Length: 366
Image (cartoon, rainbow, N blue to C red; front, side, top):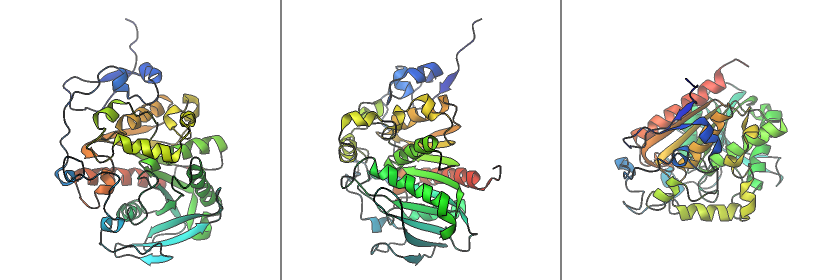
């Protein structure tokens, strides 16, 4: 009997038939296409049943979308308003936060917020957190609950990077700012109590795009070392015609038109969107070989779902250790929205992310 080709078993999308695709087909799939779409399985047409607490955010509920999030202060767990960046702040959750202006990057300085557990050891391992929301929305107050959970759960310092947002600055400024912060931490982190040899990068949405780009640059340049990467509903391509884009184009918090607008703000030249640092799904297998282990989290009702899962498959094909998980019943940004509307799904995803990062930062095999 001829040898069988290895298969990649995809997460169940609620269809009755199993979905499998040969590894060779993943390699041949056009960038931006989910392997299941390439194999012809497509969508079974079942309408996702969302977590009840999140039902108000899709258009089918209260009409909320990614462009009309609640005020960031409303997303903080304690309900306090944010009066701008603080130089030093204690909070009642067992963490402290400080702001620094690091002398690095193409613009000369990059602001970062460092949040650590009270009484934690220094120098601390680092969770480099790159926020999302289209690079034009969101701030440290918006992500405050997640940042605190990451700091306490990973027993590490969370470095939130306040990179310049589009459209005021365009690609590749944000990428280079984030890379410069990682490089500064590697070289000078101990000056502010950070362990530059133990950095895990976590990125949400467009921040996931930046984390993926950061790993590619680190491999190419060799002066930054990351022990793990976590991509939360990442942007990996500028293809707006995947199965998940078509299926969730409207009505599920993040719309296809939102992503078109975000890409126009960030990188208006269409031909440059094929660059690997802009669209990591376009990277060659050679560029992906040797990247740090990855956790890729996707949401069922998300236009970005297929490109995130396709990127996870490409990483796996390149030999990168990958855990890829699709969480059912939630839209894009469900972890962030969980601060306002807690769900069991958001808690489960948070525990998985925190546990993964904690293990990566605290094992002593290096």
